Length: 345
Image 1 (tube, rainbow, N blue to C red):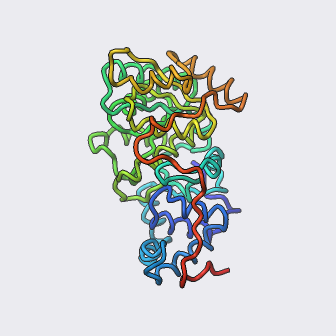
Image 2 (tube, rainbow, N blue to C red):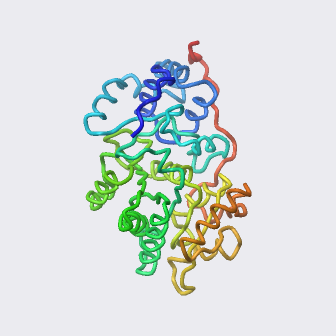
Image 3 (cartoon, helix red, strand yellow):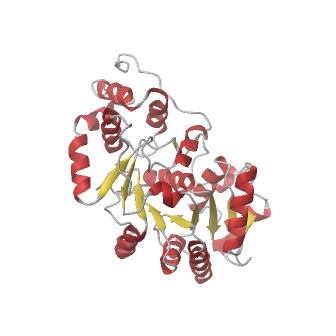
């Protein structure tokens, strides 16, 4: 496990801890400003906004007033949770790509930091990481395919990234663990809160053999917004994404869209033409938006050859496959509202 980098400014780390505790994960207004101005200046700006009720950051500023960064870090450390930020040796370099790929469902940007639980090192485990995602209401076929594919990937030295949900996610994590390989669970809530609760034992096994990661601080519960933000972290940590089952409006297609925007290989395991659970992934394959894979070797070939080529290996994903609002490709950098203090310099 890596320790915080000595070159990372303590003030920057504490500012990011405080921001993480007050904002919703992937709030592009904040992640964009942090990218442009730095965490300390953005924290000052939002704390001042907490005194201006009409300001867009008023609610965040109110939350910041109640946050204690040092205490949060101490409490997290007691239960084996650490907070990593850009500049730490453990910070995955791939996440920087999220700065320039716009937004989806008003979520986007490189996270201000990540809460991490487990003995592994995120940089090392993420070096050969592949996301395996799919339907929560998976069929027996989908569960079998996800388990076997993930087992084979783990056996060849790849880390399996998924979201600990029912269905395909669960099968993906278990497949990696069966092979005694590492796996990373990216949660919509705090890394100390298994979701779903029925996966508490699975979460403990992942923390022992791999890592549990979240943008949300310890103790935070899952929300729809946090699920949507989580998808970009799953895609951002991985060399490529495999979709195993997914209906036309499946949430797994949110991760697929992020993968395409990041210009990384998007792959799909074909399903029976009679299965509603496979309509979305079959359509991605038919339209050439995802390559068809049936074995771990197919996945490894796609990741190595297409990543080296630099085109991601997929066409632009059809917006109709993405549940909810259409994404915006513009960075949402807000301007100070009238009467609000500018960032103190």
